[in-house]
Length: 372
Image (cartoon, rainbow, N blue to C red; front, side):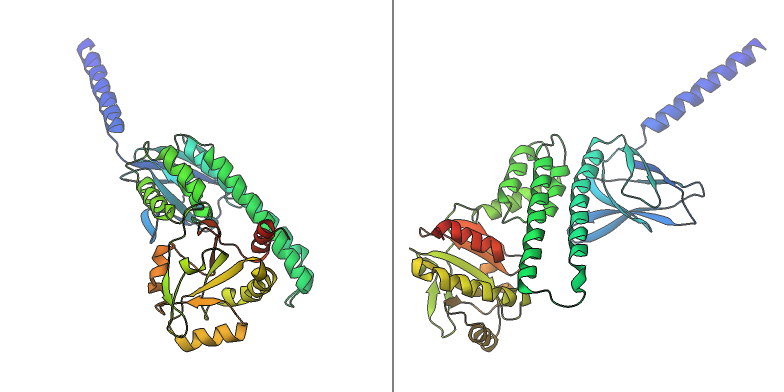
């Protein structure tokens, strides 16, 4: 009997050791979760966020009690999105992480995640942006009285001013929070809320602070490359020169306008937001041209007749240039243009002062420069 008992004990130890070895040998990640007040059957998809779209990593059915489990392997710490009927959650999944997640079915954003500092940071950052979205909804409700009709011009200007104020404050809050984080890849995700040309200093700050630590990360290498591309058009640098044809085939360069404060306005006849902004640029051009202000309109058109027709219709009485190659234009890569309208303000010495100025922000900057 004693030998049998000792044999059973030895066998149990072997099984216990084998189980521990199996657990420690587990590779890949695991996300265990529970949906509170889950209703009905539904599936969960865990997908990797990439520059070209979403790539499915794992799919799981939610059990009757609301529990689920997702597993898989990743080559590096990765931003993923958990997708279900109630909404999406963006998460950081590490190569060998073991996460616990819980959230109510009617309020997925009020999730709780364990075992992950970076996911807590990501949640805080999304909370900042969600507060901004709620403020925008309140602003929309404030002016809902106009329904489908167009509000008076003064009301339109007030709406734009209030929205811009909210947006600027939100972006500042995101930058301040993300910039305070250490040993975290979350600041790389924060750049998705921002505009590279306008927020270059923040992009550069993140790159300098984190590149050495996360040099092997695809997010670090992508941002590092982007920062180096943007550096040549960063504020304070000389604006890269352009040699283009005007509508009559005559060469025109940006450097020929040196000695004036120049707004380089990248636009096109087919771009409605560009055309909507043109009256404001015309007004400011007429107000400041006698003080040394000029505009250089750089078109991304590919049709000369359409380009000239828009110039004449909108009464754009300043210098114009284009190579009529649309998005294949040399200026697109030269100035890292991702969308239009896009503006670059250049001082009298040819140095870049600011970018993406439109509407009230452009008027405010010109007031600051010219004193009225």
